[in-house]
Image (cartoon, rainbow, N blue to C red; front, side, top):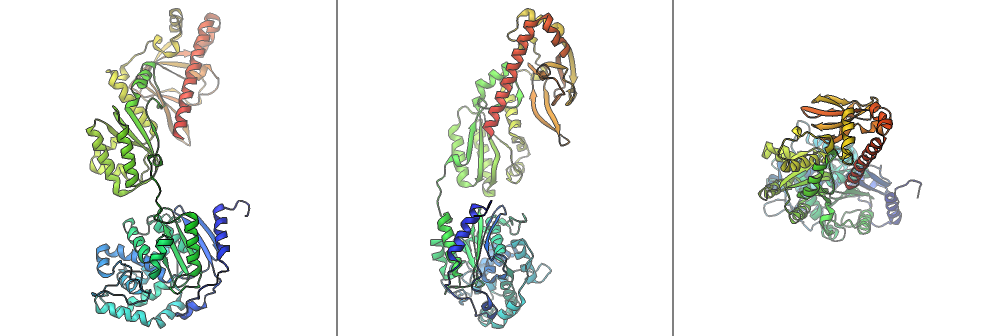
Length: 608
């Protein structure tokens, strides 16, 4: 193994080495140009849905796509015509016949789009978009592959010159009006689409594009509407390997398509695409090495589509918290802290993770409903959710209404814009925008305020704190309180006023007696809010702990903010005038800072 080489690449190389000396099968020669292929050519590529490629062997060697094209032209036809019209022309049942069999039902409809009869009919369904149909097909294949593809003119001419059986099939399709115009241009397009040049990397990316729900993982461009991906993969599963399709799905279990040029691609939906290139074919027209390699990969890596993994709520619910186990970045006074400790269990915060499908949604819903116990709010933290199946988005709205009937409000936070939940909710009712919060700490702070409002029936902006009510003063006697009052200067700020500026000299601290303030800092030319404080808290207290410039902004967040200002100069005078008070105050401030640090560390641990 080379230094820094991927373990996965080493594994694929071991599979390559295992089969590189396999000499079973023969190169296709019924099309003369195909017979020129070197039987020793051999390549393997795995492409993940986030665009990582693992390559071994002759992965840049170009060859013609041949029948692998059938799956991708079928995708184009579905987009151009819709499912119903395509099904009226081409069936979806396995034929059990060879790829070039004249397999038509009593109405002339081909059995499926993966045999030649169905593929020719499918090519005839591709609509011109102003350019020639074959150019549209070639361009679409290029989008699937993530690079510009071209047609091998020699192979095309060879196919056209020897394609008598396919021409017969084309005229039979015209006889039954499956093809509704002159079949000859359609046949030429079919011969040309089969002659498009690809390499093993291209096929792996094309497979990964289907695995990625129609989005090319290399270019990140959508190539096919996601509603048609399942149709293409379904036909590949049942018919993609011709009359070997049943054995293929039984033993290997991946949607696949092969071509007589020596290529095979397979798709593991949601995870990866795999391509193998090796020209020698078996008697069914499939690459001998390709079959062996993919069989071994499926067995070794447990890739079978129908492997059943046991589901549990823990797979999709990372944690369940309440307001007694976590808190916002807003500094609360003692009365508020006590209220939140007493009533924090009325809020449940579920951190969801992974891809949410119907099965995972059902587990999440059941876990939520079984956890309710005088619960007023349920929060779904979506920060670790990669995708929500668009078909089940409405079920989240139904859960919202179900919880509402139980006097419980469902809220969301940390939603990636691509998940689609907030967009769907807003379509249903614009008031639902209030259910979505950008950050977890935003919704936690809002919930804390809601709980406090239930038990303190006044507007909290009107609450005024006396000096004796401050936690840092609760160990001071009346003489100390009176002395401290004499040293404090009342100051008033209007909303958005800067109380403390980042970078200023730390020369004072403030006892916040009324109103709320925000704590923020400037970085990358942006202001980032990190916390907020209500009455009964100190701000700027680091002035007496460590000298130097201020590390953050303190800004008035209420219409009127009232503070008592203690200058560093007056604090230092306590050393001679009231040394015991200074020591006690310093101890209490240190304890308060320690408690804030403990809470911050706990929240960080909960979020990891």
